[in-house]
Length: 466
Image (cartoon, one colour):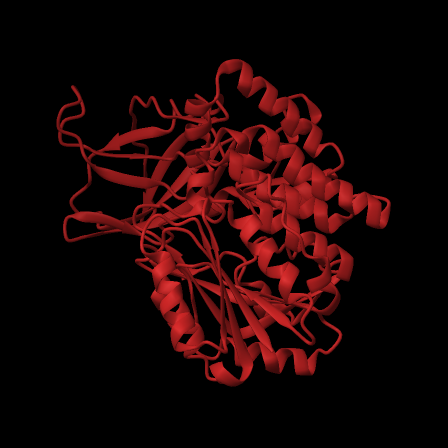
C-alpha cells in the first residue's frame, strides 16, 4: 500500500488540486493508495477541505489536525510514526501545493518490482505555475536507475517531495523539528547514507509549484537569519557528523552534496540579500563558520561543482583563508581556466554583448556600446576587444564602465576596462568579436545585425549565476 503524506498549512487555494492528483492516479486510488493529511494549524479553509475528502473517501483518508502551527517537520514525523507500524507500507511525500503526474505511483510500483533491494526512490521534478522547466538535477535520471553513492558521489539528492521510502528507510526517517529549512535534505540523506544507494524513477513526474509571490517555504527560507547562523551546524555539519559515525569519515558523497548546496550562498541574488540581512560582524562570523564547514571537503571535490569560476574561487578562498584564483593556461588561440586539473572554462566560449546606441554620454552619442563582463575574466588595461569582418579588423573605443562583481560583500571582479563603443560601418551586418590579452588574439562570439539590433547565440553562459 502506498501512503501519500501531505502536510498542509494555509494552502486552501491549492490543496484540492494536490489531493485530486493523488486520487486520479492510474494505479487505482481506492485499491492501492492511502492519504495521510495533516492540517498544521491553518487559519484559512484548509482543514475544511481535508474533512471533505475524509467524508468522501473514509477508508482511504486519514486526517490529523493541530490547533497551532508545529512546522512541517513535526507534521511529517507524526505521520511517519503511525505509518511505519503498517505492514508493507511505502510512503510518498507530497507538498500541499504540488502535483503528481497521473501515473507517478504506478511508475514507482514498476520500479520497486524491478529493483526489490532499493528502499528509496525519487521522481523527476518539473516546475510549473510561475516558473516552468526541469529541475537542474534531472540529468541524473538519464544516467542511471540506481545511484551507488560510493561510485556516483556527485549525484546529490536534496528534496523530499516526490521521494518514496519503504522498509529500513521508512524506519530510519526522522525530521529535525528545530529546522525550518533543509530539514528534508538532512533527513533524506541520513537515510541514503544508511542505505548506500537510492533509485531514480525515470518516467515518474513530480510537479513542483513555483508560486508567483515566492511564498513557498523554500523561497522564504533565504530571508531567515537562521539560514546564516544555526543552519550551518544543524544542517551541513550535522550531516557530516552522521557520515563520520556511519563511515568514520566525511565520504565524498557528503562532501560534494554540501559544497554543491553551499555555492547557493555565493550567487549574486543571494549575496545581495545576505549583505542586507547581516551586519559586518555577522558577515565575518558567517564566513568563519563557512570555513569550518569547508574544512573536510577536498579541493578536488570542490573543483567538480558545476558553478561559475568566481564562485569556485570564493569557496576555495574561504576554505584556505587566502585569495585563490583559477589557473590560466594560455594556448596559441585560447585561455583555459582550471583548478586542480579540472577544466572550468575557456575564454573562447565567453560572450561579448551589445546593448544599444548611446544618447546621453558626451562624446559617444549615437554609437553602439557593449561590454565583455564575463564572470570568468577581468580585463586589464592592456587588454582590448576587437571586431573582424572579411579580413578587416576594427578596434572600438574604450567606454567608461563602473560595473563590479561582488560575492558576500567582497569585490571579485572590476569591469572598468570591459566596455566599449563603436560606429557600425554600413557594410558590416555581421562580424566576429575577439579579445587581445597576454599577447595573443582569442576569437569570441559571432554577431549579426537584423531588424535594427544585434543578435548572437548563447544568451547565457554555462554555470553563470551572475
